[in-house]
Image (cartoon, rainbow, N blue to C red; front, side, top):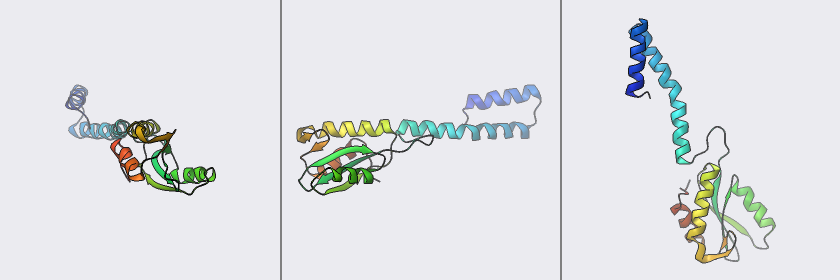
Length: 146
């Protein structure tokens, strides 16, 4: 959407160049159409959402049969669960994944969730709290459920 100043500048230029009202309106419409993708892109960047074909990243919560919970980031949490389970003697269950974020935003949500869960930290990204507590920490950090 054009600002009032931009619209006034177009109308002033149109008057100086002798453009018809129809021509002026068409130019304004074209400028507004051209500005929409940039506005949408800016809003997506502000919201921490993927832009320009960037692959979205999710914050996930998994728990294993031993009572440990993992909070991490992956562009494919389902594949990540399989990779973790292959190295873990216990079954691992994916219990939560967020909407897709830009990588920087997902890492920010993950870091905040880890800070909230610090009293339950077992090792690295593994915690001894229950899965519901970890999910609430991720949601509270901005990982809105899908």
